[in-house]
Image (cartoon, rainbow, N blue to C red):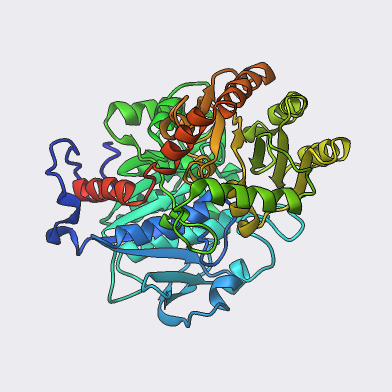
Amino acid sequence: MDRAAVADGCEERPLEGRAQGEADSPARSQQRILFVTPEMSDFVKVGGLGLVSAALPRALRSFADARVLIPGYREVVEGRFPLEFVGQLPGLADIPSCKLARLVVQDGLVVYALVCPELFAREGTPYADARGAPWADSDVRFARLSLGAAQMAAGLGDPAWTPAVLHLNDWPAALAAGYLEWLGVRACAVMTIHNLAFQGLFPPERLAGLGVPDRAFAQDGVEFHGKLSFLKAGIYYASHVTTVSETYAKEITRVENGCGLHGLLAGRAQEGKLTGILNGIEDDWRLDAAGRARTDPEAWKEENAEAVRKAFRLALSKGPLFAIISRLVHQKGVDLAIEAADEIISEGGQIVATGSGEKRFEEAIVDLSRRNPGAVGAHIGFDDEEARRIFAGSDFLLMPSRFEPCGLSQMYAQKSGTLPIARRTGGLVDTIEDGVTGFLFNAISREALSGAVRRATAAFGSRARFDAMRRRAMSRDFAWARPAGRYGALYQSLA
């Protein structure tokens, strides 16, 4: 079967040779795109996907009728935007029926919510309860999201609006590509992988309960090492697969980073149906927290550095200030940053860390702060305004990730005049100019990170060079217009 054909034989035209500016042509303005996501920072955000889901659909609206589909969490249903109920979506097997509500946020973006209180009206995050335990019925919760998207593409739900393309994000939305195939729905699906490590794996006994036909439980289908994989369904059945940086798109076709799906992904790449499209960041990162233009970046940085040192009880210092702003998990290489801390401090540097995650890393960060009063400050938790202030006040950002599909922090850092020190992987390669706007290193080791830190410290000691690097970093363009245009060309190629 040609996997580019999702029920209706969606035929993909090559992206090469398109006229410049075609993404903005009036003929494309009526293109109907449904962006399907488990989180959106307007309502609920767990990670970078929530930020992307708020920003990318808005950028798409410059040339397409892009709307969002999200589960009807309490934050959505009980929020400040009134809901208009536009339809009823039928259930399937163990997936209950639900109402479809339409709401319009302050800037005019239309958001659809699947109102199903028995699945979504709960305390906790989209993925876990208030104690952090994964929802026992996550398969049904996100099958409901996926099925809802496919049903909308079939013309159910809102009688006034039917999408032509489903843009599916990560495993919670991935099964929609399968439902299009199994239900015979004429629509195309773009599957975006934000992090291949999270795949949505469930026992094969759940096939019937989720309305997945037995024939789909095969290597050419949803089966993955004896389990049902939501993400594999999305990769296999989608018209086109994207991921969030060009380097990561190459990495995931190899065994080291393919999480067991490298063979399938390599096949999709060979078909010309795997594309890396780098994420963007919001334009307001061009401004400081008060919305003032950064007309005097040196003075602005000094003002914020003073505020950060005061807030984290660090000593007054003329040395470099290093930041850790991250989920405190193994993927992010937090252990490497902790191991490099003594060398940073011995050379006159200071460290400020904020984030939450695995208990062992939280405890290690707190212990590092206790052992180095005045040199290390820590806050276990996350606050957006505090993070912005740290980005603005720091000289360097430590980002020694073992893998990083895209990463947003290194872009926020550069726009804030903070130079990232990062491992050469994924989106970090695509967004950091080594020795120009930051510093890259290769090996996953304390020694490799320490070597990059020494290069950074040497640059800090040369004021002219450091100021030039800072100005270059702040001038980088990471706005959403470019990636949105690439997605627009992709959608049009599927039309």
